[in-house]
Length: 165
Image (cartoon, rainbow, N blue to C red; front, side, top):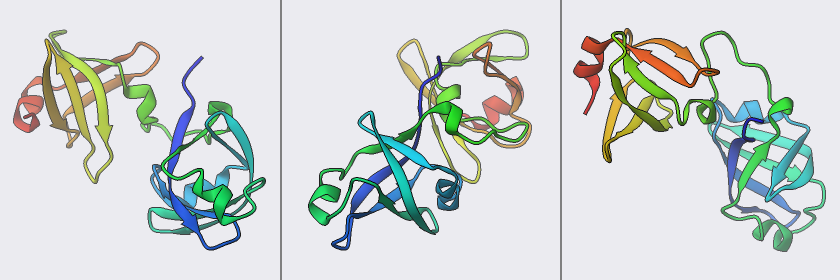
């Protein structure tokens, strides 16, 4: 079974009626409107409403009726079960699925294991190899193939050297 997807982090209560301000960890806060229920610390909350502004959203959840209840959620991650997540278009992947992938060049030389991906205009991948951290930008021509099921990413060796630190 694949891990649940973290879609947002609770920043703070918003107002006195239990609404929460969250930082969306999706491409857009608008994406949060697709979810009918969310999980916080394993507890399921039906979503009453979502207002999105940039990468910030304001959520009203069933069972969170006032500011005091919302305050208890501050700093917590909001997750969803994978089966409730929208399917991604071809060539797009959930970050959680990339963590732990083996990265190698087209000759099969091991370059490291993915420990993190920082979303940006050009995503930044963080690898670990022999205790050393390596970062590289997923610029054009760097990543040749991603096999999530096989937990393997193949990169163009030459381009990888150009964009890695």
